[in-house]
Structure formats: C-alpha cells, structure tokens
Length: 327
Image (cartoon, rainbow, N blue to C red):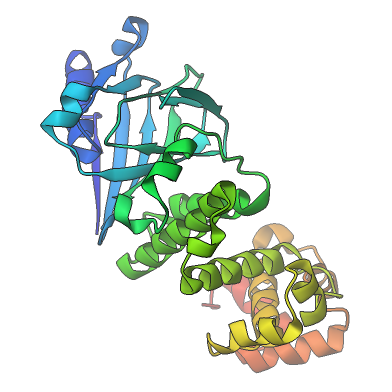
C-alpha cells in the first residue's frame, strides 16, 4: 500500500509550511528552509511505502534544505539510519564534521540521532530522491564505525555501491506498480547490499552474516548477467570468473533458488526478446537480429526455445502483438 502526499491542492503561500509539517512526520522532525525566491512556486510530493521496519519514500520537490538540531533530536528520535539515492538534481549533506555533494545515482548515509544538514541544490526542474529509513539495528555493523561513513559520497557508478544504486533506482522506477511483497523484497535486498558495501568500506566484512553476503553476491551476479545478456560467450565459467568464485559455488547459489545458471540466463534472454518483439518501435528489426542482440546465435535454436517457452513462434507472437492479441 502506497500513500501519496502532495502540495498540489494547497494554496501557494501555505505550501512550504504544510510541507514542513508533513516531512517532519514522514522522516524525522527537523527545521526546513527554502530560498524566498522559490517559495511562491514551491511544490513537493512524496510517495510512501511501509515495508515492515523499512520505510521507502520517493520525494519529488523544489530544492530546499533541512536541519536536524540537538533540540529536535531530544524531542523525538526513531534511532534510524536514512539512505538517500539521488535520482534527479544534486544533493548535499553535512554530518559528523563532513560535507559531501551527491550527483545522480550516488548514495548517502546519515543518522537520525546526531545533528545534520541536508539539502537539494537549485535546479531547472524539481529534484528527486529515494530515501530508505530503517532501524540502526538493521545493520550488523559497529555503530561507532558507521559514524565514519555518514555524509560520505558512495559513488553510484562503480563497485558494490553501483549495485546498491541500481537496486534503489529500480525500486524508485517501479514503486507505484510493485506489490507490497515485491517492494519489501527489493528494499530488504537494497539494505543487505548496502550492508556489504559499508562493511567493505570499514574493512569489517567478517561481521556481515553469511546469508547477507550470499544474497548480495547473488544480486551482483544477476546484475552482471543482465548487463552481458547479449554476449553469446556468457557461460557459467565466465560468470564465476568475473566474481572470483568457483563454478560449483555459482551453481550452488542458483540451486538454492531452484534454478540453474543456464536456465536463468535463457529466461532473461527470452524475456528481453519477447519485450522487443512486442515493441512497435522495433517492428522493422528482423527477428534474427533481435535474437542475436540478446545472445541467441542460432535463429533455429532461438525459434524453438521461444516456442517452448511461450507456445508461439517468434513470428506468430510478433504478429499477435501487432494486432493487440498477445498478452
């Protein structure tokens, strides 16, 4: 269940005061400030999903800043971590004597129990953030050590941080349409992958539970497979080598999920081909070219595999998609 709160129906002169009250309840109590030149055209919207101990919020807003003061912390403190993923615009954060700027895809961590300043920088269009709030106890890492990572930019383009960013952006993109169980699964996975990223930065990997490491590694492998689906040489051997594990370890990871490596790769390739065959913008692309794009080097093998999966040949499926009969 997702709740949406917006300033759309609030009088312009009352929007920021309304938003200050709303946002303090959604996240934590704080002081908010908006450039006077932006107040008359201030707009904000937040979509909220409660996922057990995790609250996921998608914020779209006119740039402004918020400050968490010692006085406000004494008034109310959920003892939570907040993780932000910048989706549009630029953000900044200050906590524990550090200050960092965040571009699209970057992640940031801050602690509700200590003062901080966070803001979105002025931009031509509304800024957007995905914010996860979860209990500090959710991270099996020493709180004293985690203090070294607040207000530190975690780049969204490389390493395990890239996987965390990818999962959070996927969550943000599909938040309105995901079921509660799907949103919960993605949020939990994001926290687990983030745990591994933070542990790596702190050199405390040994403190991460084996199950968390396993799930994070599996997510990393899934992302690698998705990025290399078009490579006909994508094999269990190349996948295992890219993640510095043995092929037997790789097969065990997939076996625990009731899958095989080859079966998972084939399924993802077929899904991409099916999507492209149903896309009217790709109607002029030959079927064999679409198949090759997603790693099927033999047109005959692709045709038979597609028919086995969907009960129609690729040509029949495309024809039904064009007439609106394909599901």
